[in-house]
Image 1 (tube, rainbow, N blue to C red):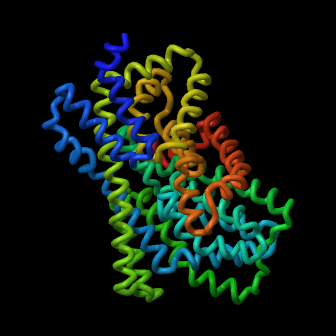
Image 2: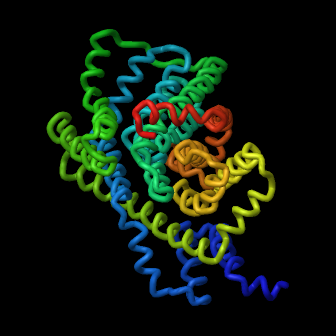
Image 3: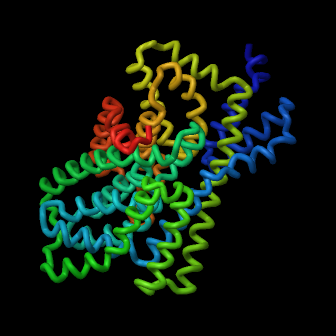
Length: 433
């Protein structure tokens, strides 16, 4: 039996991916090498790999990914993030937990610009973590608030995760964007309650307001940044442009604000913007391409059918299967990034979604919300990693105060899972479903 196992391509498809992954080999390399090795030794047509690699990323919807990454970096570098933070800080004033609540609100807003959790931590952490520490907040708690709330970036549109999900599931990205708005607000609300309770217990407060003139000043300075999601989402739902075109419009809008309005865009800043964007885009697209190849391999050798059959054989109760899927995704989020999980697990789940007759839009929002938690759950925890680098703390120090926030986010996930209307209400209102 052991001999037959070692000659089974299914065994090697899993082993050649999981063993390097445990050894901390980058996810894209693990996926790519597993695919190449199995295809080569079982003669599955290795000549097609190069074509499939390029075809996996040569899709119009995926063009939005580098554009939204670039737009987010521009908004950060030209000073839009700082001005929005100043406005929210002035609005919340010195109420209990004011700065922490402001952090959640700003992260939710910045999610409507960036679409990336780690990018949101990088953009806001440099400003908000020192501000909260200066105001007397525990630095680890301040960092945890930034890291966990930045997960909202992949729920609130525009979202790179929704773009990937829409590409795999052949669903409208615009509809997914609309479906993510209310669930994103629900998660933000739960996080605000959690940070308020912690702040009240510890006596954390915000900074006193500086008066009406100061508020008017910061509002005017932040107005151009506040218009960004209005332009992006308003243009999409107004039928003016597609999500991909909206990403390009966001780039040029950010460049205009930095060059003409704030006048902070120099050649040096422009170089930093493009270099950061190129690196981030290369990482994402390499993972997307390799994960696409691995998904094809999994389908070819029969992993998808076998795992789907196992899940369906456990129970015919939709609630039980849904609970199992969420648990699997939560554990997967501890090891893999959201885009990789989409490409690896969605092909396994498609037969189940169809068998159970679940709404793919609602399922996409639920899955993305689940994966947002994965960005702050060790050992991978990309958001915590960026937060640790900014704050100078260890991931272990940040993880402890993050637990209560994760519990709040998990409660929000339960609501989104149990009540599909939270996700489908706005798309139906906009006649997108």
